[in-house]
Length: 326
Ligand code: DP6
Image (cartoon, rainbow, N blue to C red):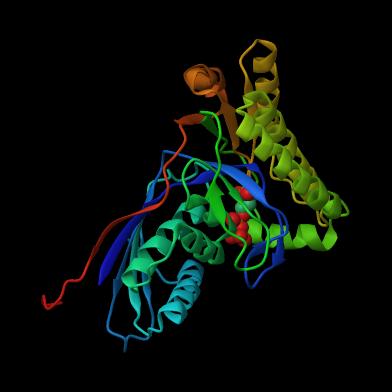
């Protein structure tokens, strides 16, 4: 059995930063994101002979045999548990995010893997259950299952899933900044933030409120309010992370220069708002009609990539090779 699925990255407008339960991958707060329509990850899962000792993982043509393979195997163990199967799998993934673009590939990666693995193991899951499953691979992958703008609910295992919400048309411009310091991964950084940042409790309470405000702004089609909340929430996340001990600082002086350029753009009448994830790259939210102008204005800060709002993750094909020779 082989199943192939495609999923796209997403960028949070209200960030997920911190888990309430690491085993179940339950977030401490809800979050809201916009899916991108660039850089899909396409993943095939082929069930192999059940006597094979391990799963295999090939990423962009290279066999992976370390940390990421272990993460894929743990994820497939969950799927095998749900399907009552002990068949091993060969996972082949093509990730089109250019190296160094700074867009997390774990979101599109685990979303595509969830859809392909569920189909290969014969599970017929709803969008909600696919999103719950993707959550177990990487938190942000939860939001790469539905299309458009989506909310990922905090809650228990059954209640923590993502779904599309009504929102006005929006675009994003990704500004790649290559001079960042060596990054500490988001998983470890989240743990350190929770354990040591005195700002963390305020992050949780304020973000919970911001999710409600953001959903109201999306429903009202209020782009200005969406943008203001997006930029504010990103800066609050970075302030909370910088409050950890030892401190973690993801934004470089060039990142801050892009935030400043976005403020200047607004003074010139272009509505744009900046956000940034666990790295130095900055993503700028704007109206679709302004994206080329925004991209042009930010060109000098790094490579720019424009994106519209993306589609849901989907199964491309699912086939049983039957008695074809293997
Ligand atoms: C800053 O989803 O990569 O991008 O759940 O540990 O795999 P794990 O973390 P991950 O964290 C993403 C954090 C973020 C904010 C966001 O996407 O909401």
